[in-house]
Each structure stands twice: as structure tokens, then as C-alpha cells.
Image 1 (tube, rainbow, N blue to C red):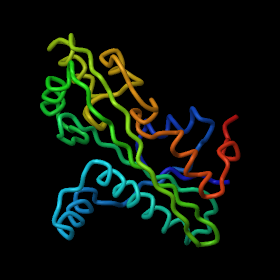
Image 2 (image 1 turned 180 degrees about the vertical axis):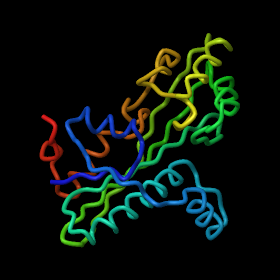
Image 3 (image 1 turned 30 degrees about the horizontal axis):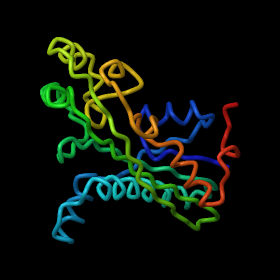
Amino acid sequence: MQVCLASTSPARLALMRQAGIEPRLESPGVDEDAAVAAVERAEGRTLPPAEHVQLLAAAKARDVAARLAGEGFDGLVIGGDSMFELGGVLSGKPHTPENATARWETMRGRTGVLHSGHTVIRVTGGSLAEAHAVAEARVTFASDVTDAEIAAYVATGEPLEVAGAFTVDSLGGPFIERVDGDPSTVVGMSLSTVRRLARELGAEWTALWNRI
């Protein structure tokens, strides 16, 4: 069975590869800010974290699945989105060194929640079936992270384009003391959640292995 990752995230691709799957990669054509704003405007409310990430995960997967269905694709399309919540404030990618630095100064010594939305779509003969779930993991940062360490980490560029301005599986890992929940959730996608959603759609995880 074919697998398509509706994402350009290197971290999500690395997770899939580590789990024995070499997916097809497709970039979703979704304006994330506009998609969230449209729903919030229509419903007159601010989406809570779980709904926020799930909305975007579904939008990404649906965009790619609709394209692939017209090509005769037969398999699974996986979409995901992640946001970090600290003290009731939700944040995505910081994009700039200034934002990343400010976030780390706020995060050190505290615990936040990484929310990760998942949508898996089974594409068969042009028909689509969907399964959805949100996974969460609590992340505790070391209290003794110095300003110099923050500056050095931000200077590497790594935290600029990742949700919450940190990684757990790369340079940011030593500054994190504890993760409660599926560790892959913090990397960018809960593999255990994707496995469960694939099974809901009639696909066994081991049948997706193509790198072993």
C-alpha cells in the first residue's frame, strides 16, 4: 500500500523513515492562517489548541488526497499539524531569532503542552475515507538554561522553523528534562496515533513497511 506524507517537514519525514516507511512527499497548498481565521470568523470564537491543530491537519491531508485521487493513487495520505501551548498561549514556528529567543526565555523552567493534530485519509479508486485524532505531550524545560545557551541555540537556526521553537531529537534535546506522552508527538507526529488511525481505515501498520 502506498503512503503519502502531506507535509514538507524534515522531522516528520525522518520519523516515517525510522518507522520503516519511505513515503511519497506532497506539499499541501493550504493557507494556514486564512483557514483558521475563516472558521473562527464564521463561528465567532477562538479555536482551542486541539481544534486548531486538527483543523489544519485535516485541511492539509484533504488538499493532497483530492489531488492524488485524480491520479489513481491507492493508499494512505497523512496530514499533521503541531502547536505548543505554554501558560494558555499557543505558538507555532517563531520564524525569527528574536521570537525564538523570547520564547526560550519564557519556557525555561516551565512545562508546556505540545498539541499534534493528525488526519489519515484512505484513497481507494477515487473514494476517500478519513480518520482523525489529536495527541498531546507535556514538555518540561530545564530551569538552568543560560542566556548564552539560548543565544547559541537560536544562532544555529534550528528553532526558527519548528513548532514551539524547540526540538527534542536534535540540538534542543539537552535543554529538555522530561516528556510525558508519546515522544514522537514532540518530534512532529505521534506514530502510535497514526498507526491506530491507519488501522481504523483497514490498513495494518506492518503492511506499510517498505524500508526493511
